[in-house]
Image (tube, rainbow, N blue to C red; front, side, top):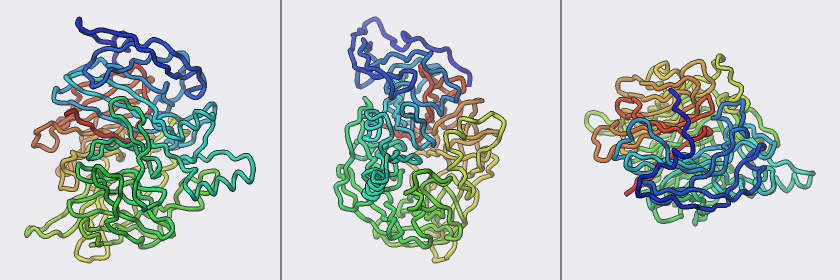
Length: 557
């Protein structure tokens, strides 16, 4: 992508002749040379302008450039300050029908004082927003105020167990106490750095794989409101990081690490109580397979049992293994289970080829010419049963890419076919030729109106080789089995998120939103036409933001 001219601070304060600018005093915290946890409090005048937003945005001063000389790609570099907000200059045209807020969550702070975290998934959560109205765009970001983040900020050290990080203990008694806290869940992080969802009742919740890491936020201000406390007695410490959320329900999986299996649960809008639909017992292995996400159809919940399984021994280790909290058990095989949403009964449980996936894309029910259901089709971003993808996401590996070594493991759109006739085996094949998208595939989104239904299009991050991380945006056509790719040399795009045009009848009638981290340290918001996959607008951030994971759309009524 061509780089836009860097906008001075004044350009983020666009005013019309009848607008007023007032002073706003705020006690903001900004980074010093050592980073976000080594700084002085600084109260200074902040400008507020009337813009197309439901609130009056705080325009935080930009950090001084000399404090952020950096040898790594900005995608893998800690965010420069705790919060910022302002209106962006737009190149191109934002559709006037696009009204609402795109929220993106992800790890954005990978150090405490002089201590650097190991893994992409360790970082403290940075929430980013893009607010669209009347062709204008207001952006902002803020750290989520989890207990883990606040404790690290206060004590200037790691205080909770993250994905690959464990707090250092001073002596053996402290170590025993830490183990006790692990079993009770007290030492597990609540760092909600994975996803963000809008519930049917309007609440917006940031999530990670620990249940305690469910945090309610304000989508306008990005303020942390508080913990999302489940009111039921189901217990457990972990859940799928990606629930299925619609206006009518919230579905998720609760892995049982003691008696290997999964509880399938539902929560209705307006409540915090999860109710059990049913239970699936694991077919094999010493522990449940890791379940980061799962798909649903109109009538069924699909429960994957991956041979990459949770490992209690690895959870207890002070230093991570190459597979972190998991172990690869190919001898335990892979399985796919299908549960009826209404009755909780298992209608299919089949062995499938070995697989490794973080993210399912969608699923639907296959019917014969007489309208009878014959199978469930479930698509995912499948890594050719190669577990090395986890270790490739170490920050050292991401930061050390020289531009020539092709080290990103191959991936494909993996399509499971799960027969409903009692057959013991299912199939797993590529839904299209992986070279169509550069043999890279992750971070998919679809038109949400097609959730659980037969669909044609998916939007994802693919690869332009050589690379060490998905570096393209790609539109997948599952009917023509073709892909159209968007690429900017050296840039790292985040998840492409599809927003449908109100009243649209075509599946791909809408826009695709992504945030781009540039190799020169900059970054910008990008809008692509969902149909043509051509760029229609972009808006440059005042400084580059770190890579983010998953997002959601909060429409403005």
